Image (tube, rainbow, N blue to C red; front, side, top):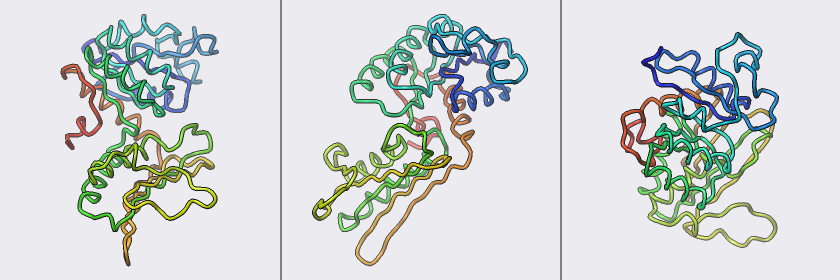
Length: 270
């Protein structure tokens, strides 16, 4: 396995972290070289396989990302904005591909990630699945084809534990719709309606978020015009699609020049 890219997983105890662990363990194209958790976490110092209740994997969970990244060819990161910004700088120092599935990043966070991308490959997406990224492309095309007589609404649903809204995927879809329309999403988006809101602003792109149960992820893009509606939809039923997509991105980035890439680049959709 020495010729295979070495992967580090951050936030390994989390739901996505454990999905990523499974994807890497089952892969014949990469191998696990590191597992990161926050200082003080119960898993730190344990073999990561043992910590999950499975067989040992020969990789001890650490709270020192710098040491782990030094051995890696790629870092896969579904954590928090603050942690991701720190990891981006450290992965760039190690010249490791940094795959970012973290959502809720601010413009200031993205500026710091862009700076890290001057020195290493970063692949960032609000959603790593093939189907969602195809949906993004379709949304851009449909928005470009339809005029402002068609109102655009992005409706998303996730499990009760999700902490950010709209979801990163919803924002990807909204950005695609804005690009198709040739407008700035920051000034043309409408999030949350309550009380007497007045009539809908022509040309605005609306967002609605649903949280409940164990919903993995559902995203609809509604184009509502006079006398007709179009709905583009993606439903995720298994989080493993995100882990497989992230691993694919980590492998794709191995021979690429430094830069800030998307899953559309990985899948050849741009």
